[in-house]
Image (tube, rainbow, N blue to C red; front, top):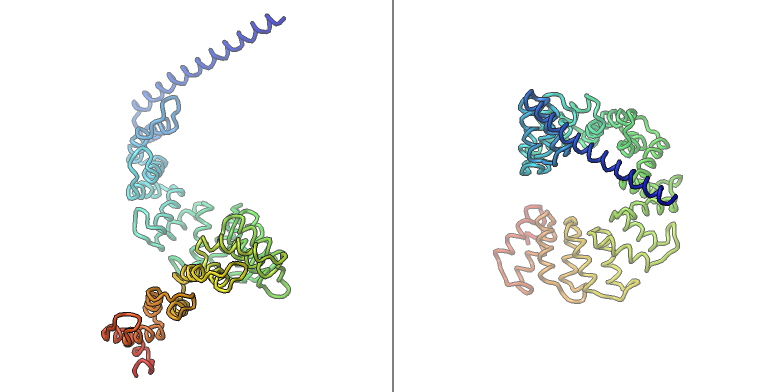
Length: 408
């Protein structure tokens, strides 16, 4: 019995092997026949199909270079699909050198022939300046053309540009129209913005409960914006909306997705014991994570904690380091305050070079007291080499703003 079973097994394997060999040979010769036939016909559709054969490796060795050449030929013969794929290959550098200008050229050819996906691609390229100059109005035009042909991603993009006032004036009514149109056709990506407009009553009659419903759906789909909106709403909202347990839940969602803002707010909630048992040591971990990602508020908090020895060993250099990181991209007032702290020795040692650097950053952004401080520093020559020319330059900025102290 075992002998018979083994024999049948061997026969079965042999039959399967023969079938596989037959299929390979069939595909090989079948594909060769197709290639000869397409080359003989020589029209746009034939070259497009040849491109697909080599692009997919259908019965032949995959060859992007050959595929690209066939798609190019078909594109010049007015094949919309071939032009689109040629554009995509130029964009990715498949079978040809990456060339965004050529990519734009091929997408345009495809778009002229009515390809809505090509219109969408051109919209994104105009938006980002890839292969062309940044042109918001042109991006909006192509998104609208694609949207009018039923492209849901394009509908969302038109809504987004209306929402942000890009390529046209801010228009919440139009934004709501396009977001809602995409939603009604089954597009889920517009839930967050649709929800915000409904919640705030912008471009549509206000409906807070309906708005929150859409924002929650967006959050469930992974939208960090939605998580942060709900976190802010429940943490800082009006009395009937305030719910720190819910706030912690949504900030934690953003935090778990690696968002620096969400991480910072989880730190805040541990620090103050909002929605969770107070735990400063745990708060510090989240502040550090967020601070290392460059979050300004987290950096400022870490600066304060190290300066005051709050849950950490007092370390004024660490305080200086974190405050400096926070202030690099801050406003003129914060830069002025940081400069004062550097010069006055608030961080233990005096950081004269950094203080002058941040006074200058603040003054260049129009802060008159920073200009006066710089003028006095160069006038006295105690912290830097005395320079009446530099002093006059900085004091003049304050005088031009009408500051009487600088005049004197």
